[in-house]
Length: 112
Image 1 (cartoon, rainbow, N blue to C red):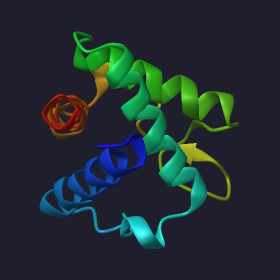
Image 2: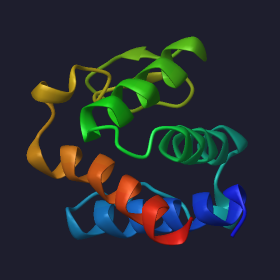
Image 3: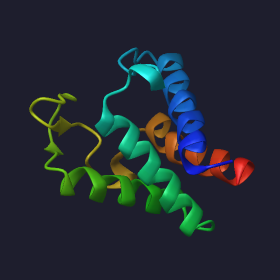
Image 4: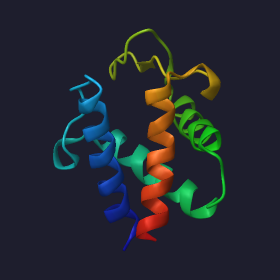
């Protein structure tokens, strides 16, 4: 399976996980903005290159991707202002947010 297909599965799994936890803000892959798809693809690339990385490393990679794209911490996710509440160290994330990094890594392992 190619990287974009794996990223699509990861994105949809993340969307479903978010919805299960009360966050209905995630669009379908086909409706997602380019920056959302790029973040998923980058996460898959990291997971493929680092198959034994802990979930915290996946989060660190995601944070670096966001920060390099001009995002910064903010109490509310806002794509226009480029703020995100999860731009914090992995250990400060709620358990349901930490689980998303574990989920991504498991999906990539299963599909690669």
